[in-house]
Image (tube, rainbow, N blue to C red; front, side, top):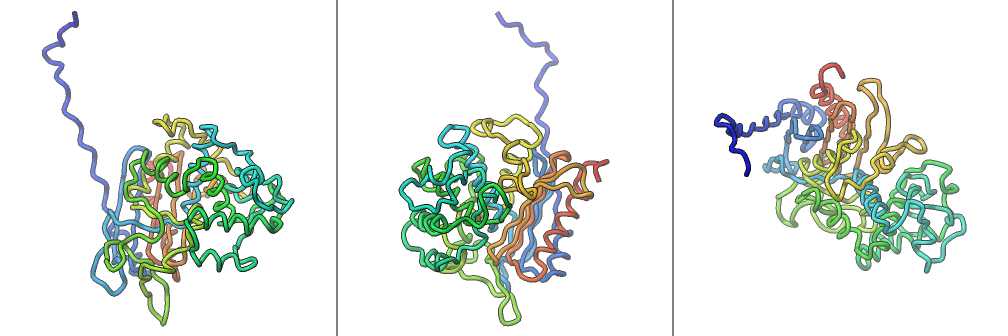
Length: 372
């Protein structure tokens, strides 16, 4: 028979979580100084959001302000998501880091130079995949959007692998959207599920990233999300949703995810906690974060740049993203248990400089005492 609890052992009331600090006063002067339509940022630890803010307009010349729940185009920050998906499938035995492009696409005519190229080399930008995709008119064909996204990716795979790699696989770092797109095609081929559906099922859903999707965010004809902007005729011009509002779907694994900063922050917390050795819930308990974060050629890991600047304690994992109409940055500081995310809806002019200034300022503001 269980013992009755002592009379004074009533459960303590739950402790309310401290509300995140507002960053509006820090962001607005920088947004105005750099002439950005909007600017947003979020800082969190592996456990909770510490600070957040969003200032400016969804559309230049309009009157709809951005909000903390708005979705932002993440560009090449998608790359680490593709690598994370690959790591999940590798842990499951669906394929291996050593799986080659020849093994993945046995029906294709592949230049012999690609024979040793592996999945791991593709997601560390060391497979020899070209920096551009304009060979033999391939980029133009991808812009025609013929077929499903998976069929478009196969067109990309065929076009790239029919020519020799730019360098022998495993010998040189070369940043490549094409390489990550081929990796994404390998994943969807191995799993038998289109890449977009696979990423949503295996990464977005378990993490609760309800805002995450693909391509430019928003509803055509509405102003329910930030617009990307280009500089034309001496002014920033919003990019209407429709043809040309983002890169071809073939390169989704390299750079077409969008999400709110709060949801992107949940993804950042997964990697921040993983880098710190914190236990993870299924299915992420199977992830090999050491493999994902270990720098290879020129300091590039799997969708992350690994570096050790002198202004923070210990190493950081970093990446940026842009489709030329948006710009964003993410930085993880594992030893300080800190993640900083910055996004703006233009890549023109000093957008990158502005994001860098925000990132550094927020690190200095939010890093634990003794680490600055």
